[in-house]
Length: 446
Image 1 (cartoon, one colour):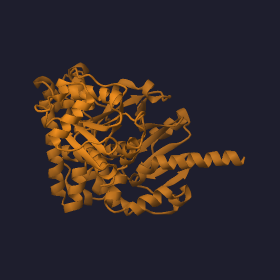
Image 2 (cartoon, helix red, strand yellow; image 1 turned 60 degrees about the vertical axis):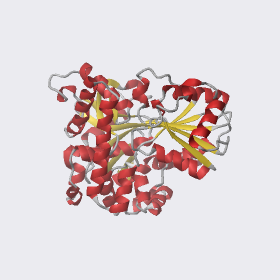
Image 3 (spheres, one colour; image 1 turned 30 degrees about the horizontal axis):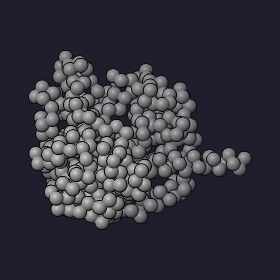
Image 4 (cartoon, one colour; image 1 turned 90 degrees about the vertical axis):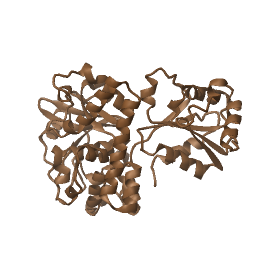
């Protein structure tokens, strides 16, 4: 399965010993961190040694017995019966948060044994660090892994030629062409989501019930982690928040309200539970901004936000979405007050570093993204209708250079407004780059 992020791993591998840091993959369970590291070991090294520290937590006492990297390497060679050769062997520490001393030792490896290629992964690092684990600041190159986006799903479904055509086409060419055949694949993706196991199950079986079982099992694993890594009281609150997210997204006003989790509840009652889910990369908070200025992070309202899950497939499970909805016109996109569509758009905007939403005087724009020196409003529509009072008001107030409307309508660019179909949203950054290049060329000609 082709993952865009793999190129970053290869780039890390090729860095000189002195500048190369320890590679850390972060992300929720089941997003493909382990597969990526093993794939790196198989394709870019002569061999690799895979060490799941959660599985060997009771037997790998060597980390508590010495801080000498060479002695640890020798012990690992004996335990796993593998010769570890600098530059030729990839060392993979999975679930590194399970042995705190091993996490601390990464700093020693970077300082005293930088000739070794060491990478690690952890699903609940954010949660465990709060429990007193010392984090090796300054010696890690951290890469976040997310579920497959729609572009990766298209490639997995054998549509790489469509992807390349869209990426290589000019703005004018995109306006001329029709890609409506991708809309049905979008419907598939909105039910299946981007969890690698769910996507692979669909490729192997084309059975929505099989996919649903996989997603249900992943969701069950998440629930197990709630009780495994949190005390009883916090675990109960985490579960309550998790079960309430789909209901909050189904509201017309999707702002997260603590009082809807439990009657009379306030932020202080559930803030720890919400932070736990955020640290575990299971949810994502999108904060409100009333006055859009750069950088977006500095102007976010801390206590006003929406909450989304990490994968649209899990949202379909939480909402108990039936596959029959795929056959029912555009209802899939508008159901639950457009919650599935909005969740999809957030995931597709994952390539932008900072995301917020704008709300003021009963007007609301679904997302704001930061692109170079521009703040770009993104309005989400669940059908072919793209008229929006909120985006018009935003444009009237702030006169953005570029605005984005995404719906089921075809691609069009006019007067600074990009109308981009949902199934092409993954190409937004590429389109923005083309528009920027064209503007520079025009300035040069003038």
